[in-house]
Image 1: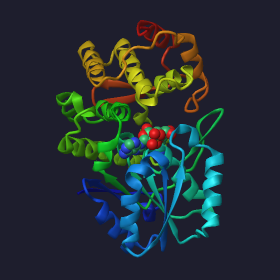
Image 2: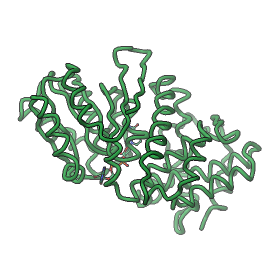
Image 3: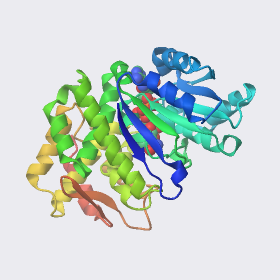
Length: 364
Ligand SMILES: NC(=O)c1ccc[n+]([C@@H]2O[C@H](COP(=O)([O-])OP(=O)(O)OC[C@H]3O[C@@H](n4cnc5c(N)ncnc54)[C@H](O)[C@@H]3O)[C@@H](O)[C@H]2O)c1
């Protein structure tokens, strides 16, 4: 098992550990038992994850002598709403959960974001821990304490910053993850490589078939490196005011593509196209080299991720969504670009004409 510690400067008591490895659940249950974070546990999961991994975790937790109750939601982004959060809270009340109850998030980013959100508001805040089960949740969403739910007006519009007590990344959970979900996570892995860790890119390049043949040692190395990068950014900028924004490489254009497709294009696919677009903009503005842009496109394509804007998505529509981006300030168009692979920076105002030209070039 490999361990990392997240240090939170604002409040050191919110610092916590991340544990990464295969077959770590038993050790995790013992850690929980000795932690004093809760006298009982509620395992929050979605019905798909619950069916494959719920029993094992609940049995291990019960084996420590603690009371353990399950709460299940429907799988998918559609569950990440205020209504689901309230429903969970009512279920917590009906089983008389109290401030000594620790919530356990067992699932992907949807379950993790919802559990963190509920934990942050139920009885003014109760402890929670994360057991992320998707690659995306392991390399990204379970770290950093951003919680939230969606509104019809947009994703993650209600939320809190609320750190978990611990994160347990059981790599064998990924054995049951469908290929499309692996690909979602790999888009974020490539992003980490591009903004911070060129060696990570080489590791992924050496095994582009990771989606179908889940090489355990390589996966552990990949998850560890990504978790380390995310933790460092979170430590430097917990509240997403400055350097944590580098994690948005590929996301400014990616989010607009996702929204313009009415979420038909998945997040990972949209981020892949967004990274290609933002790499090309970096080249146009005199930063990245042509060879580096070709390398990025080649790697994403070899992972089965899209590198062109799908037919039928309007460039003007994508630009309009970028105008409404919640991370924008004033009338400028800030985008994270790359000086070179491993060196991101925030370009505060990318000319609209440059974005338009790039998107048109990428129309398939
Ligand atoms: N908090 C953050 O910092 C942060 C960062 C990035 C993304 N997110 C959020 O994460 C969410 C996306 O997360 P996601 O991609 O993990 O999606 P998800 O939670 O919807 O999981 C994807 C699907 O995979 C299934 N699944 C999960 N683990 C499985 C396993 N081990 N075996 C088989 N099936 C499994 C789930 O049931 C679901 O159907 C979005 O809501 C996004 O906003 C949050």
